[in-house]
Amino acid sequence: MDIVVIVMIVLGLFFYFAGSVGVIRFPDFYSRLHPAGMMDSMGLLLVMGGLAIHVATGVATGDPKIIESNDILSAVKIVLIVVFVYITSPTATHAIVDAGVRAGLGPWTKKKSEDSDGKRMD
Image 1 (cartoon, rainbow, N blue to C red):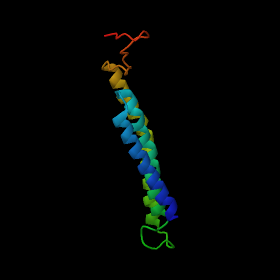
Image 2: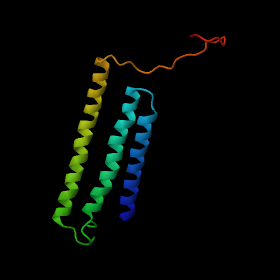
Image 3: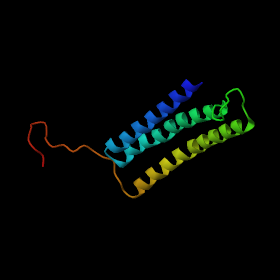
Image 4: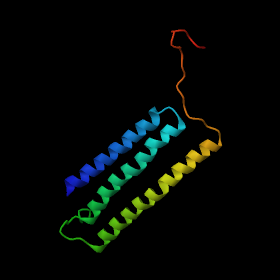
């Protein structure tokens, strides 16, 4: 079970890292929200899922053969945190996009420096 927990946490950290790189690399406000949302949802699901499995199996208390009710209760709380974030994250992302549209923020477009004849269009 420890291998499953480690794999889930490492994959979650990979999603956090990839989302962070995407937020830095993407050119405009709207395209940066996509990796931020993916980082928030998939990274959190994997890291918190691994943590919930770790806590629920009793490994956190030191004896994996004894599962206490506190362990299960803590795992349920972790799952509820994940559910809460899955409900609020898309709503917050939509509200942020709506605020950008209302502020008049347009999407990024690539500027053409040369036309088809090879002449500069400045």
